[in-house]
Amino acid sequence: MKPGKITALIVDDEALARRFIRRMLKEDHDVEIAGECNDGKSAIARIQKHKPDIVFLDVQMPAMDGFGVLEAIDPEQLPEVIFTTAYEKYAVRAFELHALDYLLKPFDQIRFRDAMRHAKERLNQRQQ
Image: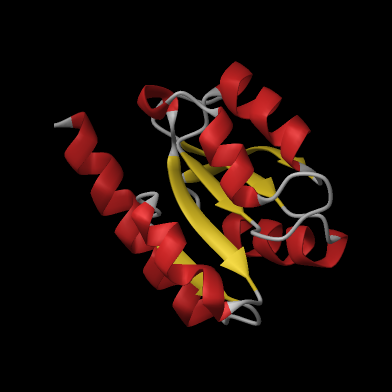
């Protein structure tokens, strides 16, 4: 990864959703995509190995949901998490697990940029 760049991991079982987030991130020159995963187990391995700054995490995925991913990671190693899901009903649980944001699909570019601005502010606070 390039120095000074924010690293992001995209985790979603739907290729179309991953492509949409990837396209949004490519417009942000402060961000480098650390990879993509289509299931929870590979997401855990990638988070533990690459330690991304931000994870865009779908809630409902086969075999292991997004909450299972978070529960499998040491709390000290958790990146900032922005949930991306089509289901409103998981929002409270997401924030109980200290999610940074909760993007309800289909979200637009403005909402995505707001989430990224919030993420950058949080990451800057962490560094200071």
